[in-house]
Length: 273
Image (cartoon, rainbow, N blue to C red):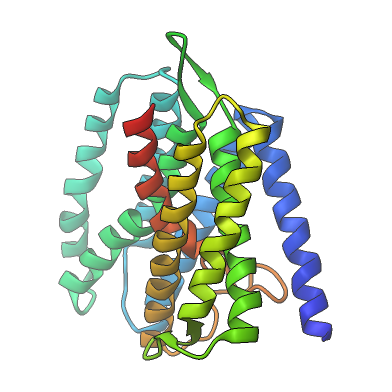
């Protein structure tokens, strides 16, 4: 019971800080999520090192920071998309740098370095394009879809937990996550759709259909995101990805759903808007 109270309190505080940063404005959003992206990427590489591999941590953290900043500036049209071409020297320098490191398993090190950027940095960076989109011919900061994404994740997690604990009988992916059930997944879908229905009144200028589609896809992609992160942890033999918050484990544990949901929602929003 004490662990549940700790988890609830810290989860509430984390959600409050996250929501406040998004609502405060584009700069507070960018600063917080840049820090989170940096920390999450470092946490991923720490897991890799625990598994006995040697990814290029510091070059990758620098590259990840640049990717996020370029994405933010491109999303608000301060820079052209062509600016991403300047990342090419960093990308092609990576295998050359590996030559001088004299580490074992160089191909694995290179693969994990690249995968970390794809798995962690790019999903965080795509959140910038949810925060900025065009209305009446102008690109402006709009927090509504960004807030909605996190509300869907939190709602689905709550629904999945409540119905899974009470009615969970049929395991969803027992080999990877023994506690997840189909009943919990259905509960997550129901609570996410309820959240979408409520948000359609709070944000009436967004189509209820768009919000409902977002909710459904967040649950599906988020569930796969959770399973993928569990697979990674299980392969390494750790319970949590880190110690970011008491009762919640690491930052990757808190954002595992977002890592797969963010790219999916990005393309959905691009299609609708």
